Image (cartoon, rainbow, N blue to C red):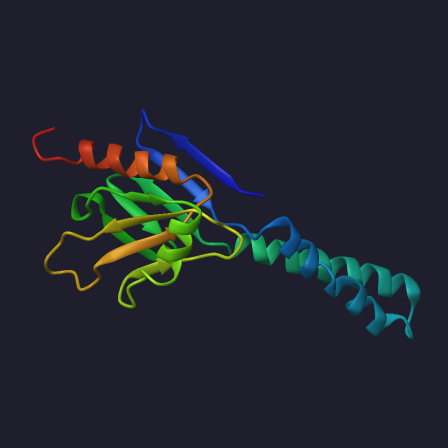
Length: 161
C-alpha cells in the first residue's frame, strides 16, 4: 500500500507511510459492526451502511497517513519541514539497529515520525546551532532511497552550485 516516487535526477522523493495491509483489514472490521446497527431497520440499508463505513474508515486511514518528501532543497516529514543544508549525512538503520533507533537511542527532543509495521529508519542529525532539535528519526520502507535523496538534495543545495 506504499506509494513513493523517487527520481534522483530531479532530487525528488515521496513516500506515504500507509498502514500495513493487516491493519487496514483489521480496520475494515467496523463494516459488519455498522451493518448490525441497521439490520433491525432494513437489511439492504444495513449492507450499504456497513460497506460505506468500512470504505470510509480505510480511505481515511490511507489519506491521513503522513508523507516523507525531499523536494526543492527541503525534507518534509509529516507536518515538519527543514532545509537539507541544516542536516548532516543520513544514517540508515535496519533490523536491530532500527529497533534501537526507535527505542533506546531515541532522543526525547528529536523529531520523530515513527510508524508501526515499518521496520527501517533513517536518522539525520540537525547541524543548525539555532535549532533545538538534535535529529530527525523517520520510519521508511525505502531507507536507502530516502538517504540518497537527502544526500542528493544536500549536494544540489550547496552554495556555489
